[in-house]
Length: 416
Image (cartoon, rainbow, N blue to C red; front, side):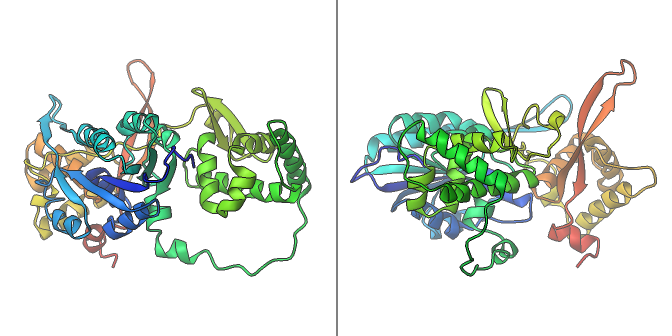
């Protein structure tokens, strides 16, 4: 974590929440944001003196949230939303959360010099520029996003990154999976790790003095390997610039300052040279991978941060359905997916499936499907490859599936 230059008298915190982004991202995994946990996460960095949450509070999905936010000490800020439908019938929504939140950040940095840390709860890449500007003004910036939908560009610019599902409010089973360990006997260091530790110490000493034993460096390298393992097994890209932030979460502060601060690049290079991980440069950035990952799969990292589905709540949408209608559309999608020869569902196939069920025109049904994605009833599945019949040119398309953890889906399919 970089200090951001905050001295005495600059220890207060501003918490700014892109409520729609955070809430809809968590809904993809059948979770809801806990405002108290969010505020407590911000309080790790100092006294919260300025706290706001931004959304279109007229949206039925969020209409009941302002009271809870007030109770938790966050001021709900209404953001104007523009809704329109394309010629293809797709619902499109543009809101100005990023603009309003950015303006408030800059205004607060001028009006309240006591605020030295800005906590921005959003994974949206559009906050990239305001993060850069705040850091240029000497402010520390903390980003809180979800692990599966936070922009890589945003992550790399922040001083600290917390993942809501891992660091703010971990799932109960995840937290329980980490039992308290008894003090262990001194373990023998695996030869390749010992060689990597010696090389890492050599690289670090070339840049300045470091008071550390090879065994201590080896323990730091183990932490880096664990970070790579966690990220890659969960399908998340790991830029080298993020390793230092992750190490700081896992190590005692004194050990991090003495052993690892500013040295993550040297340590990762030593592990790469020893064959314990792979470091690949793409788009002017170093990315870390497991040593056994296929080379063709890592030529270019994925664009992190899945675009959330948008819908026009003023039109026909999931919120307008009765309990029986919700069950009917869910069962129809389930039955279509399980027909012989149907391996996956595209957006348009779902639309065609639901037209006779809800008896609505094409644009209404498309808006319904988008709203089901936002509500977490549907989720994005695997990306598939197809070939144009006229040209033979390859193209990629998304597939969609019911989220079997969603309560409505579980009731409709009798999974409870």
